[in-house]
Length: 198
Image 1 (cartoon, rainbow, N blue to C red):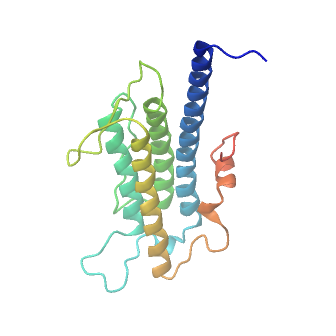
Image 2: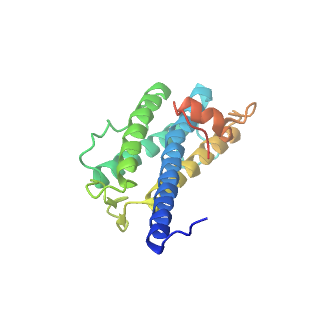
């Protein structure tokens, strides 16, 4: 068996590295696509009676579930405006007036635009347009990349947990009969992906 030259070995390692990085990038993008499928699942199964309900004993009110969903959507718009101004921003949600149906439609739009932003941010293209991640004037700007994905996904995961806990505390259990947000194979299909978690 012939041994590879040092240059050929380096080329194979580089190809392997690029393929590995491309697979990680694609997995992150697929995971973010499923992020909105998780939100849509909760919105579909949420009892309308809990949408604006306040926890008993809450003084001056905390965020209602409607307000949390509005917050998630409106944060996405902030990220888009600051990090990808070339992408069209959907209309903001009013936390005091939006319906479940309006929130679901708004989340589909902002989720799609955030996926476009992340696709560009995680691209290896030297011409990518999303080079920074700005969360707002209150925080430092970061280079666009894996940390941007992690922040965006964990922000939504935190608030999804909040929503499910609020519903439970108000006496409306959501996703208690199915694995729901933990059944990622189904979420991949729901997001229209031809792949599966990898």
